[in-house]
Image (cartoon, rainbow, N blue to C red; front, side):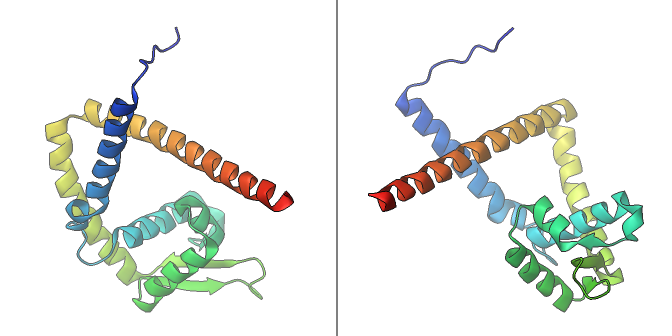
Length: 175
């Protein structure tokens, strides 16, 4: 049975657009940032990604290649390299390469990185554990599923807009 979608007027679309944007802003700004004292949200996600990628791939001996990290975090290689450089400078990761480096560089979480990650994870688990208990596991599961769908749709729309803009510039150049 196909889903019935209500037609919305321009004012409703405007209100939803502003509310979604505002909620994302609040989550990305102060409220969640207050939980991150010893590392940034991006650093936490990077360490989590490195640790989980290295757990999944036993043949890589705990290594996570920058390309994998870049893809997973949806960052350019340049952005990923800059972030890893900062993590390395703080002693949270070891950054190296095999052979001549032509196969790519990889990172591993250091003992210090693992310690700070675990501390941060504990803090988040304490906070989110209370939130999940109050909000309800079923509500959270549904919300996360819907957020993933929304994110996929938004990314798709943004990509289409960028492609249309790029195509428009190509047309202008041809004239």
